Amino acid sequence: MSVAELKEKHAAATETVNNLRERLKQRRQQLLDTDVAGYARSQGKSPLTFGPTDLLCCRTLQGHTGKVYSLDWTPERNRIVSASQDGRLIVWNALTSQKTHAIKLPCAWVMTCAFSPAGQSVACGGLDSMCSIFNLNSQTDRDGNLPVSKTLSGHKGYVSCCQYVPDEDIHIITSSGDQTCVLWDITTGLRTSVFGGEFQSGHTADVLSVSINGSNSRMFVSGSCDATARLWDSRVASRAVRTFHGHEGDVNTVKFFPDGNRFGTGSDDGTCRLFDIRTGHQLQVYYQQHGDNEVPHVTSIAFSISGRLLFAGYSNGDCYVWDTLLAKVVLNLGSVQNSHEGRITCLGLSADGSALCTGSSDTNLKIWAFGGHRRVI
Image (cartoon, rainbow, N blue to C red; front, side, top):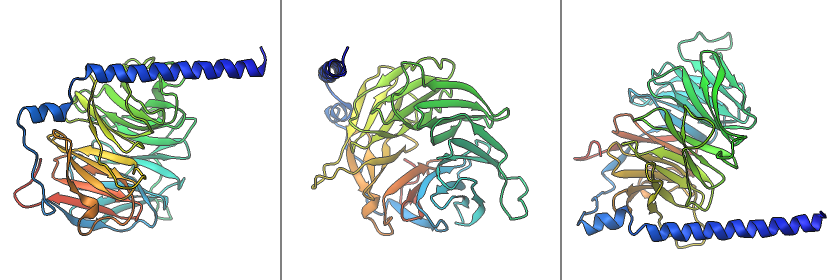
């Protein structure tokens, strides 16, 4: 068969796939007779009233000299770890703004960081394709640097995200540009399971984000540049439990809903979406119309402790607070006093739900706390 014939067959196959994809999309729309917001309105639910004094910037954490790429809270809520383009991890006391650790990394190109459940260790990964573990109680070397206590090596592409398995300090899940996710045993430094890769139900492009189900730590969800999110059972690495379609761009961020039955996504297509893991259905799209043709990418998301609020960071510096029930923006932290001066790169909620931390390309982190009569939503 000639090259021209092969190209012709490939073009025909691509067209068939695109037609089938469009038909599937239309069929899904026909089956979904309503969404969360439509049902809530039909039941007479009223939107949240939310003002600029209900979520206030109470602290700005300054110390990084490069863009902040990632952050994570400890379970006891008073410490934050952040990773930056300056090649450092900084551990902060969120109550006093003081730095407790400044860790110089062996590879400066860091993309992600995470606190262990016990709060004694931090993990990070990036363009070196490895996940490095640091024990915060270790002695520093002669130069004052904290040594790497364990290196998890095996990915064939950059490490985009890492998250410890809840209530365990010995297992961590990473996602990578090699199209896989890996469950690691930190004690041995070995891979326990590889999700994707040669398996057909795996992602077909870089995996950018993972989120572990807080209600069932065996289940986790991943988001990828193939515009899908996939649900995995850590006991069955050979195939994804379910694949979720709907986005039209890279899925940059995924996060489980507090009840563990749903999860949210954020994408380069400018939308956040809510999916049900039991039915596989898309429940809601969160999209704010912009006047210009530029659609800002969603870079990071988090849910409030009740799930009524969705915090979403965007590449244009906006940080929307969505009412998840009625799909309405109730506040934009990007337009209030003391907001960031660059794109929102990461955000996360404290374990008790009382504070939000945002990180930005302006090199700073900001802690936002509920004010007035609001404490936790």
